[in-house]
Amino acid sequence: MTSDLKELYQELILDHSKSPRNFHALKGTHRKAEGYNPLCGDRITVYLQLDGGVIKDIGFEGSGCAISKASSSMMTVSLKGKTAAEARDFFENFHSMLTERDKSFDKEKLGKLTVFQGVSEFPVRVKCATLAWHTLRAALESDGQTVSTE
Ligand code: ZN
Image (cartoon, helix red, strand yellow):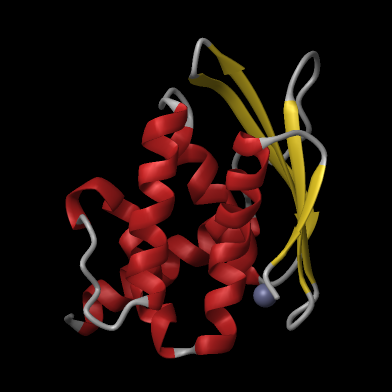
């Protein structure tokens, strides 16, 4: 990766952590799940509004480090309008990118989310980046669960 590209990626993460998108609870009927990363102290609540298997709306609230916030923010942007099945597929790819050595993931599918690829070099930060996704999966599976990355 060129240093220019690296800088651009860092800017993207910085931008999303400073002004997170979809940073709010959802009104009306929705699913939600809470996630906690005790290693860093990141806490997040993910809200989902599903309609016929499609994510009509998605939001999050919480507090944490720049990586966890940026990851949550970019996740909501990527998943709005997608189906629950597609969201699970995103999860699998994102998780593979950060945790698997051979990194067999779909770069094209992840798009901008590949900015987090560098995080895989920092195992402690991987939990920060994947927290939102684990929480999302919990929200997809059932309602009102608390997930921990431990
Ligand atoms: Zn963190």
